[in-house]
Amino acid sequence: MNTEALITMLFTQGIVIIFAVYFFYKVLTIKPKQEPDSFSENDDEVERQKDN
Image 1: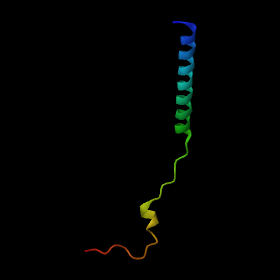
Image 2: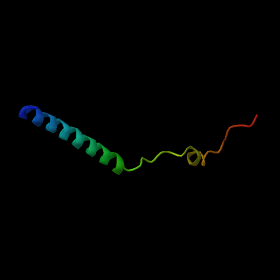
Image 3: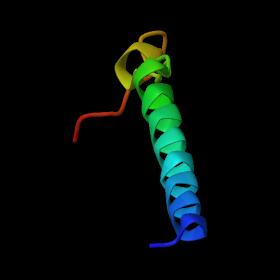
């Protein structure tokens, strides 16, 4: 393998590793999104579904 091919291969692998580490870190450190709770949102409802 000549020098240019080796440099290109190492450069490409380095970029892929940097992207993988960055996004893996981003996924692990993201704050959980507050999702609405359908039960607690309906607590103040006066009229509920009527029983059949």
